[in-house]
Image 1: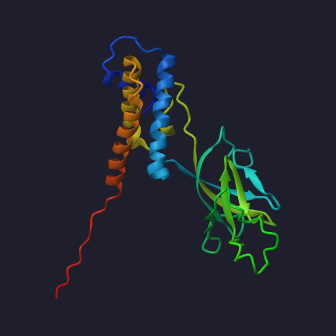
Image 2: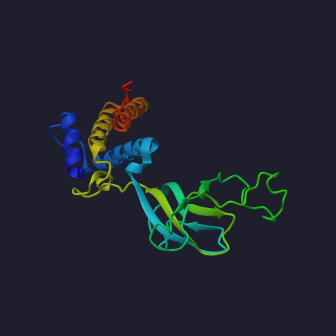
Image 3: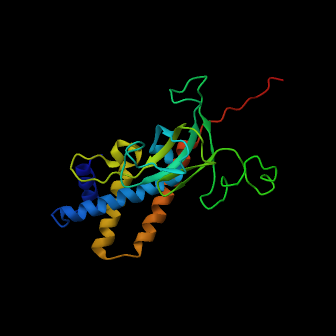
Length: 231
């Protein structure tokens, strides 16, 4: 659904026949609606927007900024990192170069900053020498700090791109099955603003959560195969 189609559908839903809404107002409300739906979808199943990127984490480096030109080359920030896996070598995935998923740790944890990884008391202190990762804003940390360059495959989600031009597509064409939900959310935001019903913002969030919960449940349901013994 393009931005032009989104606006037309939303205006149809609220039965606007004139030019009550300015272009700037429609742009602001449309992008608010899109980001609202995006966050809800990503909360249920972020794989709708997931990308996979292979990078090399430099040796002896505490952290890297994933938005940098050597990595994701994006602005303003990474929305979410879903998984980080380590490769044996900086090459395509093969049966002999399979990604090994790293565990995630909490940014506030001291994990990875022990004085001596050969210290037999490390386990007693709750410190592990296995490679782990965490994200602080858009900065990726590997702990313990790798002594050599480390090839990684990262599954991540970018921020949604704002709609500006008439031909811009909602979610850049992804999660197509939810484009009409963005139009419905936009229509509800238009009604809220027109009638000055600020309290309804919470109701919109609750309604959207229920709509997505029902949709995602139907997507995840599979037909059950029952085995009946002939004996």
